Image (cartoon, rainbow, N blue to C red):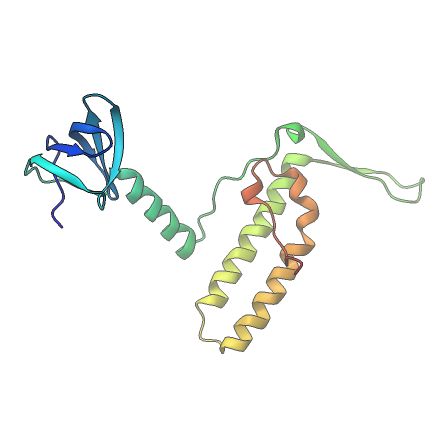
Length: 174
């Protein structure tokens, strides 16, 4: 299938006549005379009125950036930026011993959160190294189960994370 270039004129059964104004890796962006801007997937039925033979780069910068970020996360120790929940910013964690004669300990929550995210990132690196190792499949499964249990033990600290997708996830109940 040849991809149409920007400037191609088409007719669509639902939207009418229009001009291709952009192309990405999945669809045409078409400005229709009567319906304005719409996106049309490559596999939709269209009538080509006049094809423009422009060379079109169908991979957007966003696609390249997302692929690069996935590779960095997978193969390096580069960690994502993790934000603490707004309500915890500038707060403190107070540890009070059961013995009232002993002094309590105060820790900035931001510092504590940084340590928790460092632990999480290091567990992820271990997980990646196990998955890419030459261990037997059953050994990998066993170690992965331990890692999942470690994540589960750390779910208590999820309350500190601003973004839910960055929280710890342990074993899911069946």
